[in-house]
Length: 181
Image (cartoon, rainbow, N blue to C red; front, top):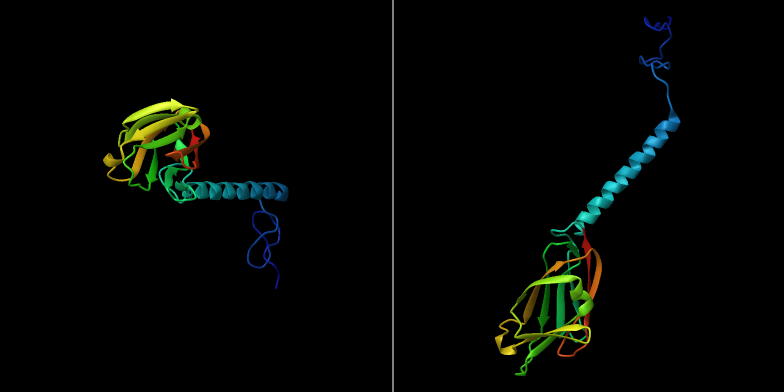
């Protein structure tokens, strides 16, 4: 029995009908470069998915919100780790209420508020002042139904913004946002 000949090329075929003489040239160097590019593309897609799950692109995520507190847990700050330039973000300060009748003084670093535009403060402070590189907001303790003060802020610059909050002269609570364009 003889091997069948191909009618078009006149070359012999291997069993199974596959020809070793294909109508195109193999370029293994090009294929290897193409595989490297493909692996890089897959890695980039995985990194984008991980960043989205982490909340880097806004609108949620595993690490969207963060909490910082002082060592006595007297003051707790909740904030978004990632914010968008010119989009509203919230900074919530939870304070363990004390029974004293004195007004509560909440201080925020001037460096932090210099990079933010304060839209609203809920509940509104009874007075405000700027002294010694800090903004001081005074609240009536009796008017604080809940011990949560909410600042609606709009970032005015891109990058990392660090700040601190102190209540009634206690140890400051440090926090930071990263603002994306």
